[in-house]
Every structure is written in structure tokens, then in C-alpha cells.
Picture 1 (cartoon, rainbow, N blue to C red):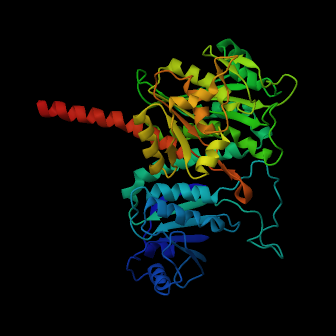
Picture 2: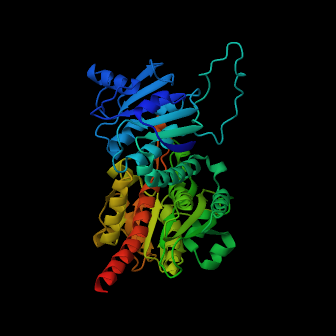
Picture 3: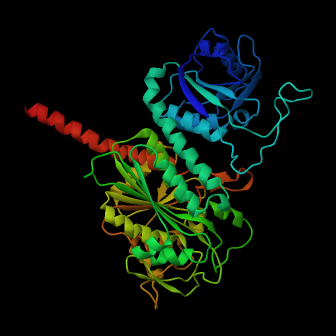
Length: 511
């Protein structure tokens, strides 16, 4: 969907030709004599449009308005959170097959973050998965009996974001558009069936991203991974006919001497559970087990657009977890890249096995921080549901920065404990560590396992098992936590620039 920013006050919006005109109406309707302002004021006075964010009043062909379809949608106090709720409420209208040109108009000047929220929410609301759907032939336009509103849901071709003064929000709009591209990229890859998102295909997607300036990519196969000594990763992959891929992306936006942030995304493109086979019910959703990998790809798609002054490395250990005659067995002991041996008590706890080798590899970049992202544990879903991602961190400053970034991006997380006592359950009589503890605090013991493979570098683990996708009627990937990660990286990029400016001012004052 092409998104454009325009100066479009209420009077001009009434004259704007489009298939759907959506008007964000705040609690206090701005006074005006134009048709839209009058319509919004009457709707509010008659209590036909509630103040609750997301309340929608559909109006067809109102007098004095060029658009046939008009939706008045309450955006409450105009905050980013309220605007997001308002725009998501327009999903059905945005996906209507007859709606190809949309205008989304702020009646009042947008608050901080509201433009970003509107752009990202509009992209989310308009998203329709089509990659593996058949191409049904629609009746010819104008044909007898043809219904212009018939057919499957579709995304609009173009959306105009109208604000009272475009120049005032241009920078925020440009950043939001890049972020929305990254979130959409992550959603698309996570949504694809496992036979359309194999480890090889993920490697090809990463190589395509490397076509953008400043991004490089290396994709390694089984022989190269074996040479690196990644015994845990190799063990998980050996039950599948699909060859593993170890994907390394590098974004260079700062000086060569600047330490990078390393993102590590779990890339299990399908998880049967291995020999510890999962129940059949809802096993199809295990195509989403590469949500961490998808988020890393999405971040790099956003970096290609935003070009922040920071260095970032993305690592994706990608494979399937399948149960054949060569598959890893409960009780097997494998040797990780770090040299630590691991007793595999449950082959369905495979994500931590591929991640631990990638975390060891990450240390060679001497990073400023390492953040791994994984659909790791059902225990985290029980603890936090789908609202917040689980955050575990060895460093308080890193944890605080990620929490702030999540709130800013409306992609929240919640910090969980990492007390040493939680690691007691991972002791093994046959190896240095077991890959699972008991049922209690399963998300925490998984994080404690990963912590063993990180040195002194500030490290954080995001368990996105509850937030990466939705089940049921709304089944599909969310694109989280791309928003959180991009917000964190932009903040990290801005911090050195602010420090340099402060130093310059100090030197000037002394001079």
C-alpha cells in the first residue's frame, strides 16, 4: 500500500476524492463551518458517535463531501495509543474490495507519536495475506450482474494521511513508513506456510535485503556450520530433509570502530517437537516458530529505509525440528559451540539449542549488546498472554531501554526475573547442563539456559511466544517485536549523536 502525507484540513478533506474518507474525531471536535466539521459536531451532539477510542459511525454520501463512504472514528484524547485503537477499528472498511483509495484525516493537530501510530495501524489493519492463495477470476468491470463490492478482502492501493500541517510531522511520517515496511515484512514471512518459508528461502530473503545500501549478508550451510563447531544447532536440524541455514546480516550505519548491536532470531521454520512429538491439535501454528527470525528480517527491512547511524548484526539459525530416524533423541548429549555439553531431556525444547550456538557466535563481534528474540516457551504465554512479550536481561540499563522502546512503539514487554536459583533445575548428571528444568517457571529456566552462553556483554532475551502471532479466527502473525526493536535501535543511534553535540557545546563554552 502506497502511503502519502498531505496537508489536508477538514474543509479540503471534504473535497478530496477517494473510496473511503476516514476522519479521526477527538473528544473536543474542532469548530468549523465545513461539511465534515459540521457532520462530526452533529454526530457527537446527538451521541451517535461515542467518545470511546475506536467507536465508528459510517455515513454514506453525506452532503457536501466528495467521498461516498465516510467513517467518523473517535480517537479520544488523540494520544498515540488512542489513535492506534481508532485506526484498527477501520479494518473491515480498509479491506473492502471496492476500496482502493483511502484518505485518513486528523481533524486536530496530531499528538507526539500519533502519526507513527496511525501509519503503522493503517498498514496493519489493511494487511491481507495473499502469497499462497489462488487467483480467483473476478467478473469483468461493468459486466451484467457484477457487484463492485464482491470478492475477497483486499488491501487498498493508496492511502493519503491528511494532517493540518504536513511539514510539522514529515520526519515522524517518514520514520513511521519505514517502520511499517519492516513490520509488514516480518508478518508476511511469519505467515507463510513452512513449505513456502524453508531455511533456504529465509536465506534468499536475507540476500535480497542485502541489495540495499549498507546491508551485507552471508548464508552458511551445514558443512560451514559444522566447521564452526555448532553441535547443538546441527543436532536439531539432522532430523529434517531441509538443510539448515545460518544467516548473518550486517547493517553498517556508523563507523567501523563502533560496536554493533547483535540481534539473534530463532528460526525454527516448522516445529513438530521432534521425537518429543507435539499434539496434533493446532500443530499447524508451529510455522510461526520462526517469529524471532522474521522479526530480525523485519528490522533489517526497516533499517534499509531509516538508515540510522548505528551498526547492527542479525543472526538467524534456521532449520526444521522433525522426527525421523536421524533425529535427536531424549537423553542424547550434544556439544555446543561454546564447548559446554547439553543433555537433551526434551527435543521440543529445541529453540534454545539453536540459539545457544548463535549466542556464542555473536560474541566474536564484540557487541555493545546482544538481544535474542524467540517464540521460546508456552510458559511465557501462560504468564503474560499476548499483550506483553517477556523480557529477561542481564543488564539493568539495557532492560530499561528496551522497556521504554516497547512503550514508545506500543509493542510492550515485561521484565521477568533471572535469579541464580532458577538455574538449579538445569543440572544434569550426564552433561554440563540439561536443556529443560521442571514445569515451574519454564520461561525463566529457558532464559537461564541461554544466559550460560553469553559472556559479560549486556544481554537481553525476548520471549515472544505469546505476542508473535494470534490464533483462532484472527490467526496470523503480528510482526512483533519489530516495533520495539527498531525503537530501541533508533534510540541507541541517537544517544551517541546527542553526546557528541553535548561535548561540542562544552568545548565551545570553554573556548
